[in-house]
Structures are given as structure tokens and as C-alpha cells.
Length: 204
Image 1: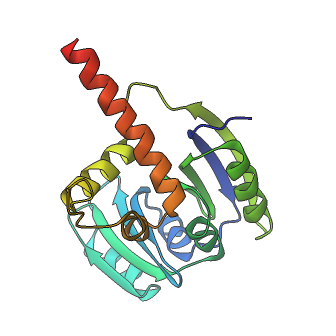
Image 2: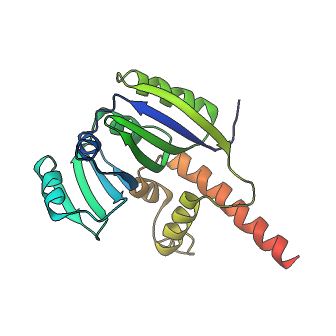
């Protein structure tokens, strides 16, 4: 049983997310570049493979609470949180990437703190009536920061978490990132260990 964070890729079928279903039925190809989970709403930053036509943006707006074009191929979509989103929001996982495979089928890449958290997460997903398949699990390289670790470190630094007079607490930062404080603490600890090791190896 792994007690260290690792990356897992899972396939979720019969997914209840309406925005992903709509994207698929429109014949568009996209992945979710970022997602912010909340109690009742979910914000998706959707990256499409090609430029999104204005009429397609209107179709997205017809079925969702808020749709905003960020660029030719990036759209911000806010929806009511589905049952899977609620499980993600209340579990010890960090969403790294989401990809639409086909209608009601999504591929998730997640950062999981340990094996027991993964088992609990999979059990909660299954209870929502979706089919879950673990595609792969990968140990995080000991000397490389993941994209998510880098993103979290940059945000923590920018918001003053490392300042003498902290500009933000661990709990506040965790709430902003939609993860639990213990999960964030573990991510920061391991990320900082990698940074220190890199520096010490570099300076000899």
C-alpha cells in the first residue's frame, strides 16, 4: 500500500456532467484545462482542439449558467455541480486534467495522497452509479515537480504564504484550491523537498 502521493488516470463512464455531454454531442473535441469545484457550481476552463465558432458558444450558453470566451479555443463554462463533481470536491484528490473521450465518458488525471484515499474515492464514485476504470497509476518522480505542484507553489508564493507575516493561511489557501488542508500540506511538503534537493544538487 502506497503512503506517498501518486498520479492516477481513471476512466469514468455514464458521467452525469451535462456540459461534457453537450460538447460531445456537438461533435467537438476538447479537454478541461482547469476546474474549480464548489458546493453547488463547477467552473470549467475548456480547451478545444480547434477555434470555437460563435454559434457553438451560443449552444453552450443554452444549457449552462455562465459561458465566457477566453480566447479562440478556450471557454469558461460554469455549471451546476454534478454528483461526480461533488465527490471530487469533498475527496482528498487534486484534479490535474480532464479529457472528453466521448459522450458521458471522461478521462481524469488526478493527484492522490495515498492508496487508502484512492480506495475511498473509487468507492464513493461507484456509489453514484458511474462506471470507473483505473487506467494507470504512476509514482511521482522524486526530483521533478508536477505541473500541479508548480502551480500550487507559485500561487502560495504570490499570495504571501512563505512571507514572515503570512499573507494567507494554509486553510485559506486550501479553500482557494478546493482541496483539504492536510492534502495541501502534504503536496507543499513534497514539492518543497524537491525544490530544496534540486538547489542542493545544483550548488553542490
